[in-house]
Length: 264
Ligand SMILES: [Zn+2]
Ligand SMILES: [Zn+2]
Image (tube, rainbow, N blue to C red):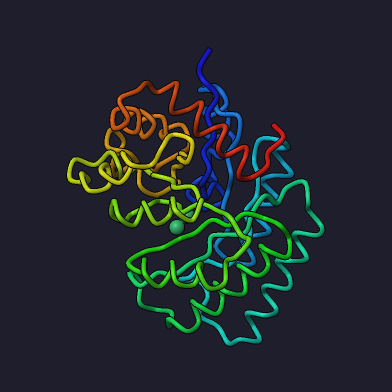
């Protein structure tokens, strides 16, 4: 029997899965996966992740929200989008397990810091109101992201997805009491800095993710990523922690269940 696994961050609603989405999900099930959490990037995809969760009850779960790189809009449009997203939380309490992905991204320069912060803060408020965890996307904006969470995230918990920071930054995430998730890039030969950060995250604070279709781990690098490939990431995390794949999967599965309050 393969150990139970959870991919805590996928985008299976992307067009790149249109031809074989069901097979991708079946491959994950065959490999021991008990859940895939799909993360939205805007209002339209928030509906799509819910649809996937309705079609795959108890297996696919939905995280709804507006991604920082999709947050460039006038404040009234943002309000409307977030109101619709909050309505979705009401209408689909069985499917929606979190708010995300939200945060700050200074790598892509299309959206102003003001727009990004406005969306981020408003969604931290939704998470608190709804008592839902958040999925944080942070790229080249670590101090800014942390400052917003410290100021506006009281009472909210969550995960730093696709962690890309330093040992020190990982420590600050842990100090918040939050989870840290590593994607396939932790397996890349040049990613020693990332492995150093992964080494200080205790197993009981670690999540596993693909960020499918992006960031396929080293053996699949350059190809479309899918949930089952995160087993390579689990192997790398096991090496970093001097343990076995099974221990990493047991821990990350338990952590995902706890954070997103999954019943299956
Ligand atoms: Zn992201
Ligand atoms: Zn993502």
